[in-house]
Amino acid sequence: MRYMLLFHHAEATEETAGAEAMADGMRAMASYAATLEQAGILVSGQVLRPSADSTTLTLVDGEPRIQDGPFADTKEQLGGVVVIDVPDLDAALEWARQAPPLAWGSVEIRPGGMHIEAGKWVPSW
Image 1 (cartoon, rainbow, N blue to C red):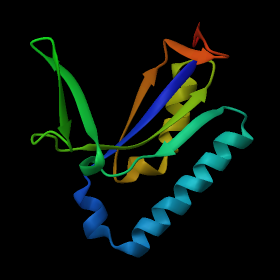
Image 2: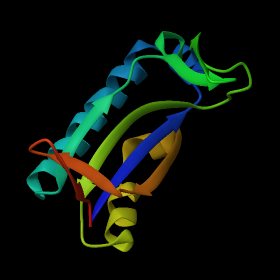
Image 3: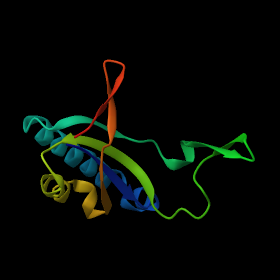
Image 4: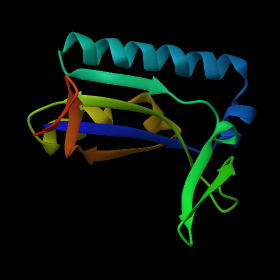
């Protein structure tokens, strides 16, 4: 079963933590990703750019609306994602407990439904 671990944090933390703490966090994430890879469960992973760089597309009255940056009321931002392939939620939770971003935010564990392989949708379980 595939699970996506979504790493949420307050982006203001990046500004107050300082360059050294951020570098330590990036090294911790690289080590975590290497551990997932060595365990043979890492499907993919990515650190995301700040939410100010995001663009959101919605439909309003049937017309597309583009909004740059985060919504004004957003307090936590999605900072990165990792997709793992493990037997069940218990295993996903165990790996999520080891994720460095848990120390400065939260880790959302979301089961996959479908993913694309060789251009076709296949179940993620």
